[in-house]
Length: 330
Ligand SMILES: NC(=O)c1ccc[n+]([C@@H]2O[C@H](COP(=O)([O-])OP(=O)(O)OC[C@H]3O[C@@H](n4cnc5c(N)ncnc54)[C@H](OP(=O)(O)O)[C@@H]3O)[C@@H](O)[C@H]2O)c1
Image: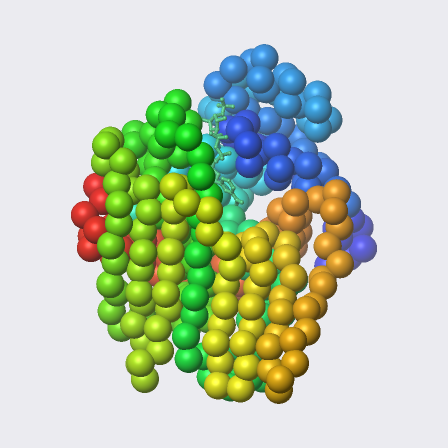
């Protein structure tokens, strides 16, 4: 890549201007080779206010208008889960590279359709599972891959918080894919999949709200040699929200909140040491996935070598499998 192309700013768009879109925009505008060019909401006022806050040039009152803007090169999809597939297809159809929030879609069938469309159009597509790109998580992956503390014997990971039940909040709205599993259970599952791969079998139990979405989900992923991953999600209870990897010669603990920029504590040889990754307090941590995406786009890649299609397919399959066991239907 020439220096000129390295510095060229990718023109980004954001679709769905809710909570996560604000955090992503905050980080995106700190990246040298990214420009927040366009934003799209279902409301012109909301789009205008968002565009003003983050300095976007265009503010659209429909998602379609953004997809029809030929200047948009990359789009970040930040709508509720049930809209991810259609929003992604709309952009891919127009040749816009798509970074789509987690869960990538509602089920494996939808993810297959998205990947097929990206391949058909020869356009970059990636699931925005930001944790994969965070330096502390990459550090832990390396330590586990190198078997610095031997093989993993057990994983414990959880994600839980309390929020009052309110069907106006997408988290509790069945129509848009609410519930704990798809929203936050995906992170403990990710911790297991990214380190141990696919389990041999799964056990799961859940509790439910009256509208049929899961309020909590407890899972055990069983691997060979009696290795287990004990995983939990809840929107009823506050959990430590850690990921702990118990290995033969030590324990690696990603501290609260493990899925965000965090610290890592190593307990080995009778000592305990906590590693600080010097994260910038002014960003949330979404810039790492966006920087990776920019690089892929500039190199003409159509698939990430970190968040691969195969990985996204496995992740959504695990969510489907757990849903089947707990009988969670949308
Ligand atoms: N990576 C992360 O750390 C992270 C964190 C939180 C959420 N997420 C993911 O990001 C997605 C959005 O989450 P969020 O917390 O930002 O949600 P949110 O605050 O509710 O925002 C979602 C936005 O989607 C748009 N939207 C379109 N149709 C909608 C509908 N029927 N109901 C509600 N909103 C609708 C709205 O934007 P307009 O009004 O502008 O159209 C809304 O503001 C989810 O899939 C979630 O899993 C990821």
